[in-house]
Every structure is written in C-alpha cells, then in structure tokens.
Length: 426
Image 1 (cartoon, one colour):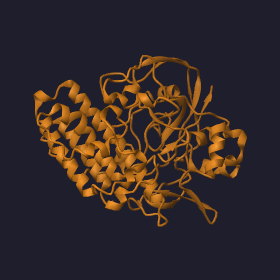
Image 2 (cartoon, helix red, strand yellow):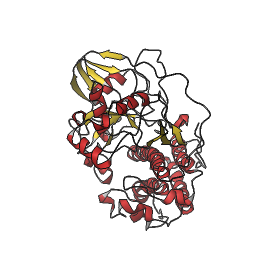
Image 3 (cartoon, helix red, strand yellow):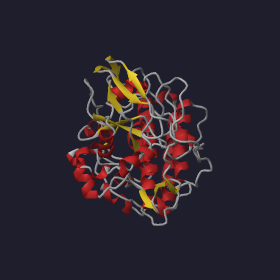
Image 4 (cartoon, helix red, strand yellow):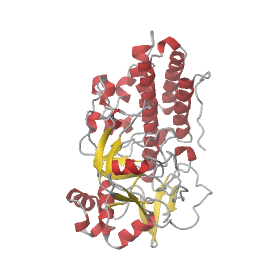
C-alpha cells in the first residue's frame, strides 16, 4: 500500500484529514527521486516532478488562500509566474515546453513552499466560519486537481526514466507475479434503451460530467475484460502496424511519421517483447492489459479484431451496477494486472488497470456551463479534438474515480496508462 509522507496536522477535521492525506500522498510519490530526477522534462506533454508538486500548491495559494485568508503572505510572489499552467485569467506563465529549464527553485525549496501553504491551509480549515460551502467546494476541486497530478507525476516520471539508456526503476521490482494465462474473452450483452448518464447527486464531480442527461443507446455487447498484451502481439505479428486499411487517415500518417512498430515503451530482445515500466525493463506480461496505446492504435486494433470501441454512454451503462474499485494507486502495483474473475458476472477491469479509450469525442453535455472565473478554464476550453477515456488506471489515486469520470486526451497521445476494451453491435 502507498503511505503518505509528512502529512500536515489534521486535528481530526474531516476536510483537514482529507487535505493532509492527499497532500501527503504527493510527497510520498516523490520520495526517492533526486533533485535531477525531479527537474528534467522529457517532452512538452510531460512536466517535471517538482513542477507538479509546486503547481498543485500554487492552486491552493492562488484560488483559496490569497482571496479567502486575510493577511496571507505568498511564499514567493515570483512562483505565480513559474507554476501557473494554463489559467489565462490568473496571469502570465512560464512556457510549458520550458518547465525542465527551471533548475531553481530546488526540489527542497518546492517542499518548503508546500509546507508554507499547507500550514496556512490548515489554519484556514480550522476556522469553521471561514469554510463556507462554496469555499469547501473549491478546496475539494483543488484536492481532485492534485490527485490528477499525482497520476501525471507517475506517467511523466516513467516517460523520463524511459529516455535513460540505463532504464532505471522508479520503484523496486515487485516480488508478486501474475499466475496463469489471460481470462478468455467473453461478451456481455446489454439491452438498448434510453439511459441517463453523467454525474448525479451532490458528491464531487468535474463540471464536464454534468448535467446528467438522457441518451439513446442501441443494444450492444461489451468484452468481459480489457485487451491483453498477448492479443496485441498477435495484432503486431499479423502486420497490424503495416496495414493501411485498418487505420484512420490521421492515424496512418502518425504511424508512418513516428515509425511506430508497437505500443510505447515496447522493444524486442532476442525475439521477446520487453517494456519499460515503473519497475524498470520487464518482459511483457501477456495476460495483463495492453497499455500506452493511442486512440489511433486502439481504433485500428478494434477494426482488426472485427469489433469497435464502445461509446462513452455504452461504457457508463455497463459500469453503472459495478462497484468503483480495482487495481489503482492504493494497491501500489504500479502496473496493470491480469483480469480477475467477477463473482457477479459483470465485466472485469472496468475501474483501474488502464484508462479505456472510447469512440466518443470529448464535448459538452447538453446544458453544460463552465464555472465563472479562472477555475472555469479547468475543462470546458479543452472540448475540441480529443477523445474520452473511462475507468481509471493503476496510477489513479483512491477516491478519484467515478462512473461518470471523463478523462480526455488527443488521439496521438499514449504516454498515459491507456488501453482499450472491445465492443460490438448486438
């Protein structure tokens, strides 16, 4: 299990307890990384570890402390420029592709920055009259925002370590290994009809998960588990990466331009596939879900398999009766694991292991309205040219997944723990 490091003093306050747990988990994830590990940026899509630690701190300082705690003094006013990400209304920012150039502040000073903000936040949380419902909602948003960055921290450090010829491990190789082969792929049938999807109730959700609304879903079938590495090897062996008819035009152009022969991090050694993981280089586990594949690759595989990707509505309908639990960050496996048999007969791996690509473009639900102010820039302005993924991964923190959660990425991206599940018309 993953244990938070150096949590702030929570004093039994439920909101303060959660704040301490989330903030402590971020520091625990950075344990063992050198200042150099935390500074380098491996590509423009990724960010250095210490930038993640500082940016999530900047969020609380900028949106909670500065406007809501009288007399709050910023740790360093210059950090507002360094650690803003994309919030135009919050002011100018350091260019994203140059975050790896920030050798100063050091990782140790970023931790000191976190402690400064955590101390002020703890004081605010102890002031009951200051914690209005609106402010409590804003703090909850900040905590979920930090949990998103915890997953990004892991995927970004994996990409960084993969660039090193030594292939160093982020964590030591686990002693536990999977037993047996992959579960046979079976199909689960679902009736069509009009279904309500999107978040319901008063618990936390991002604005893009609302409003809850009705959709028409035709009868469909969904695979009982995610696509495995072994099945993906069959796709490669059958020439899947060289068969133009399987690919969308933009996907085919990307495959040829980038010369993709396999999922990200895969390489062959003496005829055997190996992959870079958070545990270093390891033989590809055939029964585990394939991951680090783009939407383009997922779509091509589905076509090769004589199936398709599910829509996000189909995915949510299938997930509706299932518990939100699986191989996530709290299990500390740090890798996707083979599917386990479900006692209720439902599909396995709907939550955890790998985010699952859907065929649904990331767009606004009917009636969507972005929040006012800078926090309204959180999701709505990215509703163009991206696709929705569902379910969570082995790097998704506990308490951060929901049936209605809509992750989204561009179709060529694949450094996240992205996989797929097949669907077909009934």
